[in-house]
Length: 133
Image (cartoon, rainbow, N blue to C red; front, side):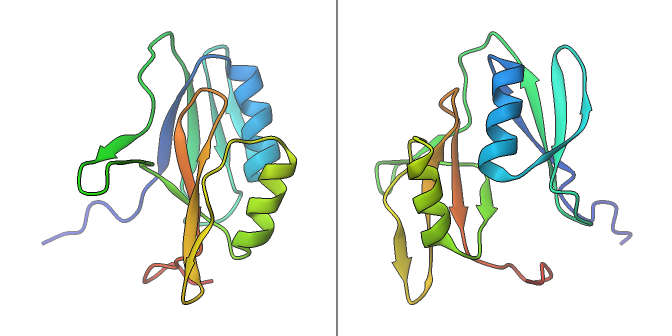
């Protein structure tokens, strides 16, 4: 069978204030603006094979998250990779970002992050097969 889909192109994130969200994602995640118009922006890590983040201005109150009914915990639908979890966690706390507890087990783990609109994101240090370092 022919392989039509080879990677994730972008993660779409609902935001209420496009300009403020662009600034937040640039500062907190190190993204760069690839394209911007009045109602959306494509941000990238400027790296080959890495998904972009598409910010979409909306009046909807729906946000990225789901309830894990096994643990009764709200989860993100996207994990951002950070090799230095402890340093990144500390950086976000210094910036006043709402973050969850840093969970490390045998050197691997992560933590939750809330963006200004209440979207739940997370950072982890897991490298999946084919991602490299």
